[in-house]
Image (cartoon, rainbow, N blue to C red):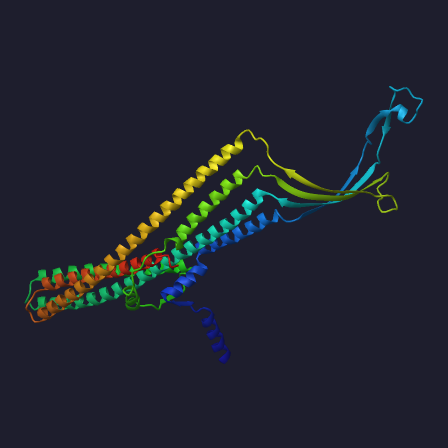
Length: 440
C-alpha cells in the first residue's frame, strides 16, 4: 500500500505544472536571456568577434606544406645541339634526348609574413567597429524587448483590475435586477424597468466576458515574450499600486543623446564609411610581404623513395613589394563613391541626433500629459464612484428609479475604463521617457 502511495506521489510530482513568479524587472531579465531576437543578436556579436579573428589572421605568419608525386607516362623529349656532346658534330645538327626520371617526388614547406599593408590595417579597424556596431544592436534589441515585456506586464495587471471591477459591478446590478423582478411580480413597477435593467446587466456581462478573454490572450502574449510554454503558470508579483508609486516620482532631466544605442549605431556606421574612404585613398601605398620556401626533390626510375637515393634541396627567401600604378581611373571613381557614402553617413548621423532630441522632447511632453491625465481621471473616478454610491442608496430608499442607477453604473464603468487607460499611458510614457534620457 505504501508503495502505491509513493508511486502516485511521484507521478503527481512529475506532472505538476511548472510555475513562474516574476516582478517587472525579473520578467525583463528572464526575457532578455530567453527571447529569440536577443539570442540572435548575441550570435551576431559572436559572429563579429570571429570576423575580427579572421581579419587579424591575415597579418600573422602563414605556413604551408606540400607533398607532390608525379609519374611521367612518357618522359619529355628535349632537343639540344649535337656538338654539345660531340665536338665533331656539325653546328646545325641537333639531338633528341629524353631527360628526367619516370618517378618524381617533391616535398616543400613555404612560409609568408605580411610586413605592411594599408588595407589590412584599415580592415582590422573596420572589423573592430563592426563588432561594436553588433554590440550596440544587441543592446538596443535587449532594451526594446525589455520595454515590450514591461508593456505586456502592465497590460495584464490593468486588464485583471478591470476584470475584478466588472465582476463586482455586474454582481451589484444582478442583485438590483433580482429585486426589480420581485417587485414587478408584486405589481409595484412596470416591466419596462425590469427590461431596462436586464439589458444593462446583459451588456455588462458581455463586457466582462470580453475582458476575461482578453486577459487570457494578454497572459499568452507575455508568456510568448518570455519564452514560457503556454501550459505553464505565470504569476505576476508586482502590483499596480507599487508601479504607480514609482511612475509618479520621476525627476525631469536633460538627455545625453550620445549614450543612446541608436546614436551609437549610426556613429559606428559613419566610422565604417570613413574607414572605407581611407582604404581607397591609401590603395596606392605599397604592400610588403616576406616569404621563404624549402623543398627537396627526388627522382627515381621506380617507385622507391626510401632507399639511399639522393634528395635535392632547394632553399629560398625573399621580400615582395607591390603597388598599383594605373587602373584605368577606377581607383579615383571608387574613392569618390566612398566619399559620397561617407558624406551620406554624416548626414544620417546628424538626422539621427535630431530625431533622438525630438524623441526626448516628445516623450517628456507625453509623460507630463499622462501624469496630468492620470490625476484628472483618478479624480473623475472618485467623483463618479461617489455619485454611483449615492444613487444606489437613493434607489434602495425608493427615491430614484432603475434608470438613474443604470446611468450611474454606466458612467462609473466608463470612468474606470478611462482611469485604467490613463494608468497604462502613464507607465508606458514614463518608461519611454527614461529610455530617451540615454541612461541605459
